[in-house]
Structures are given as structure tokens and as C-alpha cells.
Image (cartoon, rainbow, N blue to C red):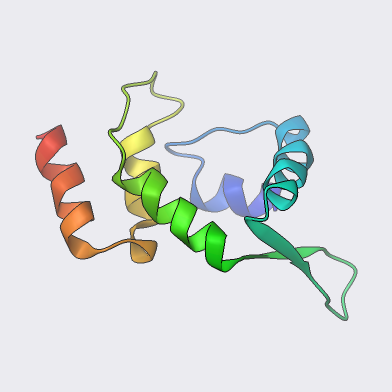
Length: 96
């Protein structure tokens, strides 16, 4: 998972290895993700229905300006496929 984050999100969202598993545990405890059974050795997680709702809610909330190593707007736009087009356009217009 850290590799995926570093590969896909690293240019606008940095994360250290020590954040990954505690964050996954919190999300699982809140019922937002579930661990999927796989044949491989890697753990995989999927959003629950509540996880999709929470992700869409988070994407829609106002973005905050952070240092370059974390760009809240770009992270939300990366996950925009989980929200409506109207919410994504609103994010871009607010930023502009």
C-alpha cells in the first residue's frame, strides 16, 4: 500500500510508513473499510458502503491550504470518481 501511495500520490500527498497501518486500523474500527480475503500474502482493503459515503462527504468539504508536501485539493480530485462531477467542479471553482 505504501508503494501504491508513493507511486500514485507522492507528488501531492506524502505519507510515512508508520501512518499506514494505524490509519487502516482506525478506518476499519469505524466501519469504513473491510479487509478482503485474497489468495496472496498482501492484505487488501475495500471501502464499505459507509466508507463510500464518508469519502464523498470528505471530498465535498472545504479544502484547506497545506504546504506543498500535502495538497488537499489534488488528493480530493484524485478520488473524485467517488463523488459527483458537480462536487469536483465546485472544488476547482473554489480553488480558482
